[in-house]
Image 1: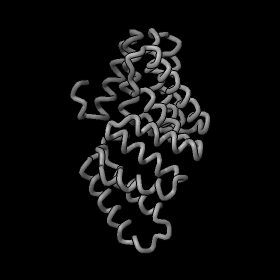
Image 2 (image 1 turned 30 degrees about the vertical axis):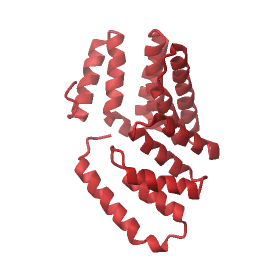
Image 3 (image 1 turned 90 degrees about the vertical axis):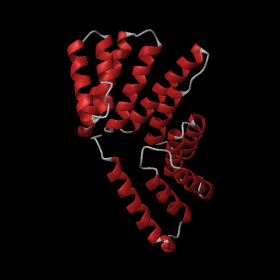
Length: 223
């Protein structure tokens, strides 16, 4: 995840949408057209109401379109509507078990907050479970290993900072880098691992991680 110029992304997105709309009349499957256009609009980090509208129509026309459910879930995530995002990822899994829905569901479960500490712990444990299933579906997918590392990281802080859980998180981050060369360019991975190193009093590891994260994502002024 190298630093990307958001203006360039927006330009590419607009060009892609233009090309999709140009061949609108040749699409035999309307749901696929709506899904692809909605997916293109959803490529930026900000919430897009048009993407929500298009993807909502796509899943209504074809409820079995897993990618449309996943994209719609991401739209709701950007909208900060965690409940609707969870519904979408569960909707996708109801039609087909897939690693994208599982790891997205893992992230959603960690965002669910409650006044009940036991319920929060249960959500995080479920987050770990979903991430593990995603890894089991494809052990060569670095993103899934990274999401599993994040799930263990949340569990570490939720359950009394057990060193065993910390090691599981570190192992997952390491595996992400082993199976996916691009994982080393993910600033979040370095930031999260550095945070664990700090709590384990591995200050050199923490310093190296924070420095690497800052180099990869210069906009993070707090590092």
